[in-house]
Image (tube, rainbow, N blue to C red; front, side, top):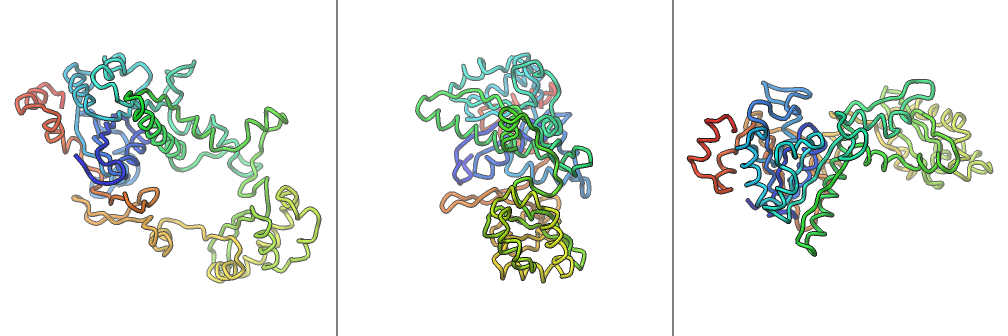
Length: 397
């Protein structure tokens, strides 16, 4: 089933659940891949029960399940396993996140799958990977956020480690998974062979957190929590305005730091020797923060944003969802899209990650009910009407 877009003609089987794997499949679907979501007939993806719902319809699934045709298969049954092998025989990618050895226990290991389809790319996304002493542990994004060092770096200096209020590690892992899949597909163009991708959710988080490992290795020091401040530059913080709004200021570039301090009436600090480096400014964060906070606190958010823009200094309003959907820049980019949903009507959601000059494709549909496309998908794969009826009678579908 070709949908247009950069990945038109790419077939993806998404047999993963919750967030990292399904989100990776969503990214591929956003680019035009034909994604088939495979769920247990009586226990569908638990993500359908996460977060808010409206009229009994889960809102997160409307985004996470977009551009995915849905089928049901009981992979613990031999007939379900055989059906998945038939589907995988013509697919390009299969994404799964069962605990290690689960596919093998179901006779669905890569040896069997690749015997039918040597070009298949199997992406295995788990908490701790396929090898090592923790491989069999249940793994979720929260654990990766803890073990990667993210939580220990996040929060106020005197407060506890802080976890994000959303699936950060899963989201990062989904991008890494999609990237790994595309790398494997590129390699396949020269070899004709697929391969297995072993991705633990913790590793992409490790990669995002800067030089903490090298710092420990070379200096023997551990990065401390600094709240909204940065250990690398100042002023950098969230500041409240006179009308109760909040803005974020960044001064990573020396020129920006100078513009900010001129704007808030403290140009005298620019000539101090310590002001010439980010680390020097960070050592004087109390003074710099105080000056910026005092100036911002005396003005409305609109006035602060206008003044910073006029000074060509870096500032951004701190948004919630109601602000995001109204922002003219984000709307100009198409970062917010409005899709007609068969159950809820027109709904808003965040759009694909980027735009392409030639091969972009609009979101085709939102997340669908479990098994909505079972008959169509199996028929396309060569199953007869009698075979489908037989599988349904046995509880496989």
